[in-house]
Length: 124
Image (cartoon, rainbow, N blue to C red; front, top):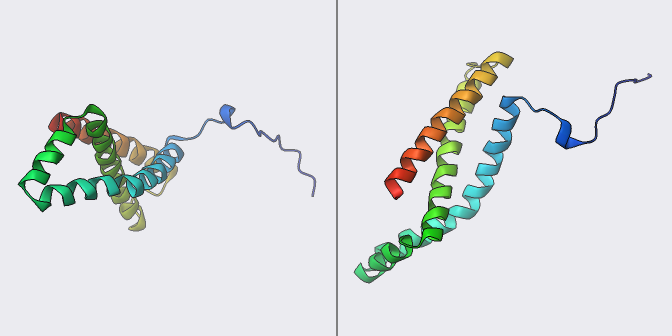
C-alpha cells in the first residue's frame, strides 16, 4: 500500500485541538499532584503535631515560595477534579462528540480557572 500523506515531524507546528490540550494538562496536573501532595501532607502533619507545629506551618506559609507552590498544587487538584468529573460524564455517554469534547474542554478550563483564582484569593 502506497502512502503519500505528508509527514510532519516538527511538533511545534502542529495545532492541537482544545480537547487534546485539556487532556495533556489533565495528565500533567496528575503528575504534579503526585509530587505536590507530599508537601501538603507534610504541612498537615506538622500542623497537627502541636501548637508549635501549627505556628511553624503558619510561618512557612508566610514565605511567598511556599505559598505559591501550595497554590499551584491546589490549582492542579482543582483542575484534575473538574476534568475528572468531565471524564466521568463521558463514561456515561455525555459529551462524546467532537463538538461536545471541545465544549467540555472549554467548560473545564473556564471552571478550573475560576476555581484557581478563588483559591488564590483564599490563600493570599
